[in-house]
Length: 96
Image (tube, rainbow, N blue to C red; front, side, top):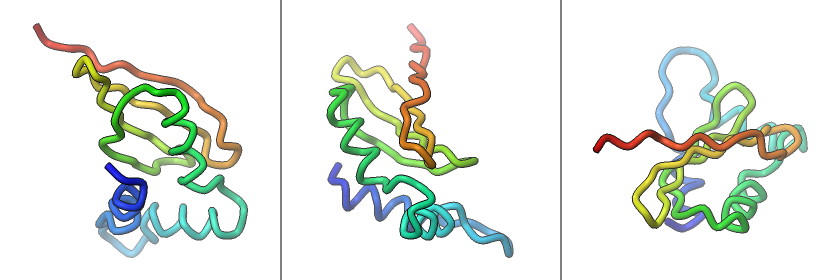
């Protein structure tokens, strides 16, 4: 999936209610320099060579990147949005 498509998914994700959607807040914070741009995070994901990015979410000041490894295992990488620091990697349990 291209970075521009991923960014589009993040930027155009629907959110209900009167509260400003996370993707709008994340984009504004990135533009102001408060958050690291998503592009920078995706470059780190690519450098790690974990797999193919399936989705990107922004939640509570973290970028959550879901990746599909070559062996079919789903992995979630979490990054601090303010610093861009890699926080953790969660590997989804597979049902046999």
